Image 1 (spheres, rainbow, N blue to C red):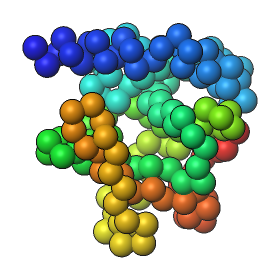
Image 2: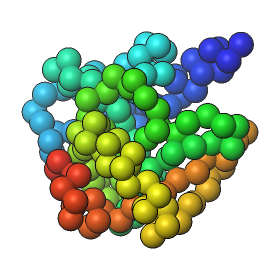
Image 3: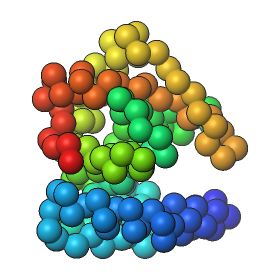
Length: 157
């Protein structure tokens, strides 16, 4: 039952509009074409797309902010995307639709930074909760400048 709901969410998560946005804006980073993942098992493991067989996780915000929302937990006790272990993605592409900006992270670098600094980051930047279907997501919105200072960002395009 849960898988069927997830399959529906997966098919909706990268709408035609979102795919077009990623295809247009990925060109700022690479000339290679993006291929979107349709495999539910891979999606569970953090793979939304491929570029030359490199596994990418995609996050797209509908408003441009000067921070990156690191989702670390849910009200139903599920882990947020930054705290999930054994993810197969190699990179995280974090986009802002209105500004057409993409921030590129090496996945393991960002996740290790969170593991090491999460208490300090939450103390500095607080917990922001957001409604996520039938649960709440808990996020820590870390300023982009802080991530730059710590050399966590690979590229901004």
